[in-house]
Length: 341
Image (cartoon, rainbow, N blue to C red; front, side, top):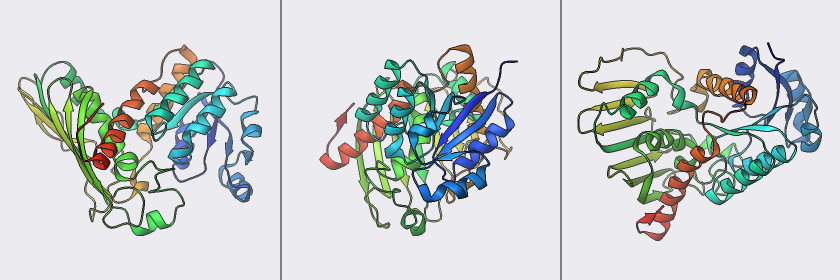
């Protein structure tokens, strides 16, 4: 067995706890260090996580047993962290989104390519067992010609969720709100199943929360394959409902809620057990309700990608697609017209 891969984490927010659990359960992984931008946080973080914590990113990246950097800081700071890690010769696994605009995503892709490092993105909902069943059915043609695909992320976040953070809901560091932060996972699933998006017409509003980004919105999508779709997203939709994915083909349809299949109408295909409640949970009202098992699958794949010198499960080009669609929705809402991708 090869020696464990040394992992460092940029960020010390709540999501880091998921990574700590994953690393502790993977024999091929070893937590080396963490980075926080707050020098006041160093000592408490060292006590909490039991490894060296740095507030100087160069010192953090200089650890010679550091092979892979996991990016878990604010969305709008992912780019600078990714570029710093790439220039230090470290492989990178970033939380979604890679960055908040496609221009910034393209910048990090370029820097990673120039430095010969792997760049993966955590879009862990692709890993749920039920989603894999749906993806297989769609890509094997079991639903026939795709007609419509819908994504609904009608969630709720309290005022404290935003007021207690200096970045959530801001355009600079969150890139928006309900679509870019909460909605992106389900939008990624939708695009992965339905194919490239040709154009969108979107409308976003900030109706309840005192934030720059949107807390309600909807969009109509035209897919290049001829199908249509719609997306609704929100963080003001009390009390918050499980995210929903609907895929309709000429031969059948499948509906998912909270990562679980709830309707399976596919001819000549045995229905899966749709009464199972195990899974990674939904963040409909509480972001901490999401489990770590799908993260573990993504991290394990990234470690294997490094060992086998192959591409990670979700590479940068794939991760870019949902950002492009969300950027187009924002642009459409601002211009009040159809936007081509």
